[in-house]
Amino acid sequence: MIILMKKNATGEEINHVTEWITSVGYQTHLSRGVERTIIGAIGDDRGRIQLKSAAFLPGVEKVVPILKPYKLAGREFQEKDTVIQVGEVLIGGPAFTVIAGPCSIESEEQMMECGYVAKKAGAKILRGGAFKPRTSPYSFQGMEEEGLKLLKKVGERTGMPVVTEVMNTTDVDMIEEYSDILQIGARNVQNFALLKRVGLCRKPILLKRGLMTTIEELLMSAEYILSSGNGRVILCERGIRTFETATRNTLDISAVPVLKELTHLPVIIDPSHAAGHAKYIIPLTRAAVAVGADGVIVEIHPEPEKAFSDGAQSLRPEQFYRLMDEVNILEAAMRDGIGGLQ
Ligand code: PEP
Ligand code: MN
Image 1 (cartoon, rainbow, N blue to C red):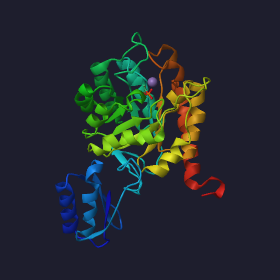
Image 2 (cartoon, rainbow, N blue to C red):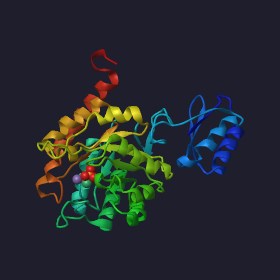
Image 3 (cartoon, helix red, strand yellow):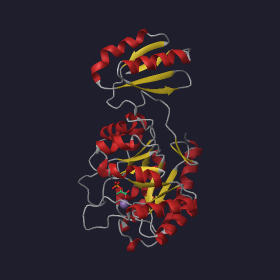
């Protein structure tokens, strides 16, 4: 339910309403707009009838049910875009944010090289996997804590915030110590225990869409994190599984405008895991800028043929420099309006 406060509602009235909602067993989430305050009452459906009597409290304009199954993630609850700040970087604002780095952290030398290239090219956030979700148990599983230390070191050295994947609830505390953003990978999008656990984190969460997840299911997964207390969720479309085999997955580009309509959360694209081939990353990044995504997360490697994971889709440094040049040109064109179109 949403409790819409009157435009002139006082702070005291807002406090009284939130206390009353809590007393009937619901959690409250405040959204302060320019015009008025909206209070989201989040809890299970059983107390709905009782909640409706909030309409009689002083300062309340009306009580309306949220029709969508996701509540905090929806535009009904919060109309304006969420902008997430990590260090000095903003995700979800006017700028197109590029996140880059290797699929896996492999060595100090490799990570340093990736950090140097990412920074020089103009990427804002550094990625690197230390715990890798691999289809085969015989594939490289990641450097774990040793890798996290390298990631943090290179992030600090280059002045970029870092993002890495967490696969297990028991690793969350450790990863939160080293990383500025925690990634929930495609395979864990419906690991509800993990979603609830990262909902308790103070760091933003990069939530990837699963291989077989609908847009609504993705938003419900985001809802687990939001309703557990962490409002800083970045959604990521990274390709879904279809009948097509020419690419590793099929990039669902339409997910971006659909998500932008349904949610206030930032939406980025991962062209690397969507395509699976380095040669498609630049065209798909162009599409990401043009479709209105808030950024991309791209895999790079100094020597892709020697990568421990996802070499085929990793860009060489010179390819990444080219990608950034194109992003800058397209971003400016989008900002200025293409050919006078707005
Ligand atoms: C990754 O980012 O390296 C990764 C494994 O991504 P995804 O979960 O999208 O497959
Ligand atoms: Mn990868």
